[in-house]
Image (cartoon, rainbow over the protein chains, first blue to last red):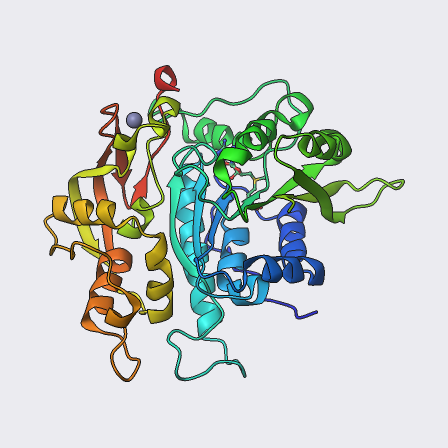
Length: 262
Length: 131
Ligand SMILES: C[S@@+](CC[C@H](N)C(=O)[O-])C[C@H]1O[C@@H](n2cnc3c(N)ncnc32)[C@H](O)[C@@H]1O
Ligand SMILES: [Zn+2]
């Protein structure tokens, strides 16, 4: 398997923005695995319409940068548009830099496949913007072809509330820890934010070819999550397509792919 | 924020989703910034079928930008005899990809809510009483 370079995030301030960790890297490995690239290429090639990729909760932008920069490898085409959302305004700013840098690095990479007659060199998709948004709430209905979400999945007693504006009366430390709590605090079973996204998926994803990748941890009870999805109206599929940290036969982290069967 | 991004966005309020008036969002007091980007002719050609032409036409008109033709150009208008990019394609690249809103507001014509854009990033979080 080709090793694709991991986007650089050294410019990101990890006091305010989630630092790429095992979960982030599991997403990169899964999206570039032989089985997923084969699935995605079959799913998205030969279709005239440009696919729209949305990452919800970009954090540093490492995942969005990876799929944008390596669109050709992962999706089999480079005429792909990508967008990101996050509740954390600092994540929005940081992610945008990460994506632009990664695309630039890929485009300047000497490549045997690079042909002079195509501008820019094949490989990268087209990044549009990062937006401060709750989940995908301002996206037009049923337009997202590939949705990626590494959610706040840690079980916690409370969920932090998002503010329209950062408060100016808080200390920087309080503000930053509040912003960072969005990256892990998942409420009951660590599933409150994920469940909200899952319930919206049928109205977010494009009806004919929408696919979602959602990361879960063992406490989220992935098997139950998948069974629930399979009961949705309209014939939905859910499969585990990546995992890491096996403990007594249980994956600590797993990634499920959700899509509509034919 | 790039103008093409507006093609994919609507009001965050649930009640607005079903109303045609919530798309497109209307830029107000927009400060525009041109950002140079490599042109990808194949991308522009392939993305056009996904572009809501009427909506982009009204946005560019509201921003006081050169007016777009009544209907979306077909593939034959985007490549010249040698297959190179035509002026129409270059103009579309400039409009959709290089024209960005650095600051301003986006207005939902259905509910009247305005979303702020600051330092190029649009904020779609609703105040709690509107969620
Ligand atoms: C576990 S971090 C993942 C960050 C990054 N995608 C990665 O893999 O490294 C979760 C991210 O989701 C964001 N987030 C949490 N709830 C959100 C919501 N309701 N809408 C948008 N983003 C959210 C957090 O601010 C945080 O950046
Ligand atoms: Zn509205």
